[in-house]
Amino acid sequence: MQYFTDIGLEVHVELSTTTKMFCGCRVVDPTQAQPNTAVCPVCLGMPGTLPVVNKQAVEYAIRAGLALHCTIAERSIFARKNYFYPDLPKGYQISQYEYPITFDGWIPITTAKGEKVIRIHRAHLEEDTGKLNHINDDGISFSLVDLNRAGIPLLEIVTEPDMHTVEEVRAYSQELRLLLRYLGITTGDMEKGAMRFEANVSMREDETAPLGTRVEIKNLNSIHSMERAIEYELKRQQRILEQGGKVSQETLGWNEAKGETFSQRSKEEAHDYRYFPEPDLPPLIVDQTWVDAVAQNMPELPVEKRARYQQELALSAEKADALIQDKATGLFFEQTVASAQDISASVIANWILGDVFSWMNESGQSIEELALSPAALVELIKLHQQHQVNKNSAKEILKEMLQSGRSAQEIITENGLQLISSEDELGKVVTRVLLEHPDEVASYHAGKETVFNWLFGQAMQACQGKGDPQLIRRLLKEALSR
Ligand code: ADP
Ligand code: MG
Ligand code: ZN
Image (cartoon, rainbow, N blue to C red; front, side):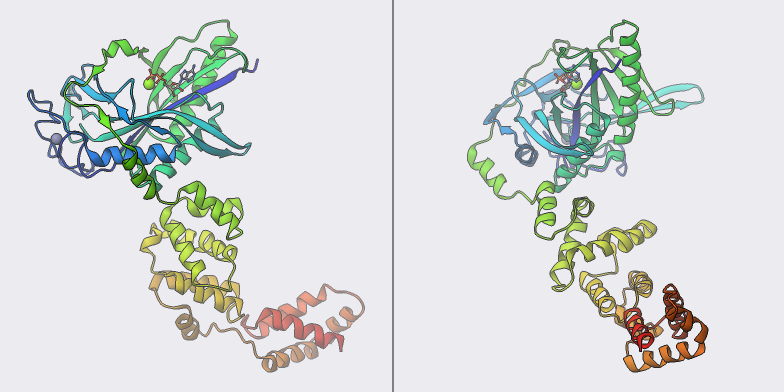
């Protein structure tokens, strides 16, 4: 039996603001800073302290909301989500509950099956918790609490259950991360926990049946683990349903090593958290003027850039998509196109996506760190197009340019890589080759046309591969038809 799958995602995004959500503490990289060095009485949860909302975090939320086609609430409310855990010093997390800052949006995604829209249910602001480090020292177990992360602003983005395959989950997650990075509101570094995914998964008999009972899978550390966890979960639920059983609503963890989900607890309900409005904060008011100002300063978004590369620069969808995956790459590409009037964008894209990308992979350099400028790349492509160097030499020259930062012309001159493009000189080579191989010439004239390529090879060899191949071909054809 084939069941129908529904998946909704909750994504926690750490905003890269300068300071924390409700206090003036610096936001530090949790993998770099000494534990508990970016804390103050507010984020330590000392009695008598008061929170103050971070304006930059609100602005980032508006930016995300606009990019996700959400409504921006003129008035939203912070709420206390109460629970006890040692990484939460106040005993509650300040979040938003009934009145989030943005809601009802959508984002287009593309899979092999085509384009579709994933609806965004809401995106709300909250604060991050601290981090527990569980230690086992000679049989004695204890946990160390680091509160550097406590109070860092989070934007929780919640979708409707609109994804029905793992491919759609992957496309959504990648597109969302790309979008948020373009907006400059998060590093998006999943390995540092700057983006954390939770997947809600259920199954039903067919698309017309009511939604099935869902499980929520937590602690997924990468998009890849999320895909594995969902695949595992779908098999598990299918087995239960096929045996006539019922899936129980619960919160699951993911064991990466075993490749299995495991039960963490039965699903908590909203009332377990005893949500109530945060008495220490007034309603958050975002007027239209502010929204308009943020809208004015939106950067070009990935969807827009993708479309522009295809429409204005005539790139294929694949090339456009590959170039926009990173803002800096797009910039490098555009600067190269701008400084080369008579080279097609597609040729430039090939050089960047091919040889420049493989160099970056090998060297670990980012595009900003390259010793290659857009103008230098243009010079090389031109020299190749004017038949000054052949393709293989051009590739070698590019490597050398990337290594040393020297110009193509310098390298060509120094290494004598310049193609021979004198008709006189190559004409002599061709004549000599034909004189030296009368038998082959005869069989060419007898109709064995493949001999042409052999003769061409001989001529190329005779000039150490430095002859302009197009010119040699022409001269050879002319000589043979005489
Ligand atoms: P909670 O905050 O308790 O996790 P929400 O109502 O905010 O609950 O829903 C969380 C996520 O679960 C949303 O992304 C939503 O789309 C998804 N979801 C809700 N019902 C289902 C379902 N039956 N199957 C799959 N996902 C679901
Ligand atoms: Mg949830
Ligand atoms: Zn603080």
